[in-house]
Length: 245
Length: 55
Image 1 (cartoon, rainbow over the protein chains, first blue to last red):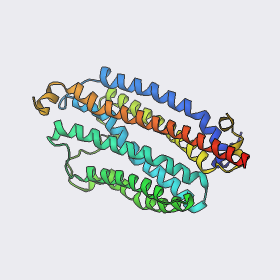
Image 2: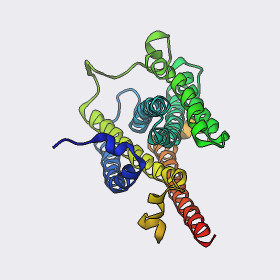
Image 3: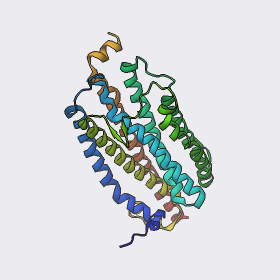
Image 4: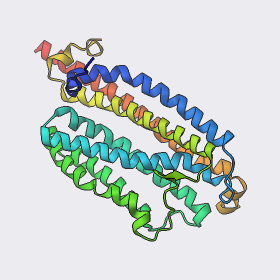
């Protein structure tokens, strides 16, 4: 059976679909968070050199990965909205931005918390840290620019340009530890394999999946509000059961 | 007792309170804000429809 994916690019069909998916993503996320925290704090052993402090990675690494990936998702949606003038793409870009910013903040915060006992400093102007901070500013810039323009369609276009130009920062963050001499260590998990202990890997991937599902659930929740707000003058919104209540 | 000594004596508390509690709090605030935004938007839409119907 062929699925017509374009059908779900219209707010009218996407809105109810998102409503049905949210509880599944939210419940799966909560279960995986509980499992990930149990594995990370109870099952996974202490690190030989970092002791208990290394356990910050179970939130730090997923947050960092998501902050970068969500930026690319946001820029992708913004580009789709700009090129094809599709309403839902721009709404999705606006919905992704706050969650991406929060993940960037958590990545920086938890990184600072790990840095103090390991490096002896909360912050250093290292290439990885600085480029991640720029990512947070790009998210905030996108949100602020979008909010500063009254006409939502013009706001979408202006913010989309910022998102697209800013996406150059994502490979800079990823490759910063290779291109420059940085205090931040290189990737432990590579496509070629990893030296990480198995339980630690399981904990981290469980937490990564939990953060992913959380991000999807919250973005879908936010985009439903944006759709309601933007499409409020349309007939299909007035006929929604939750509006009629 | 300085923070440096405290964190080395209580590493798990430091990790939990400093990073996981903060992250979970951030998530909770985000969820609360999104739920609140939905309530407000629904109210606005209902008011708009009522105003149009009464006009």
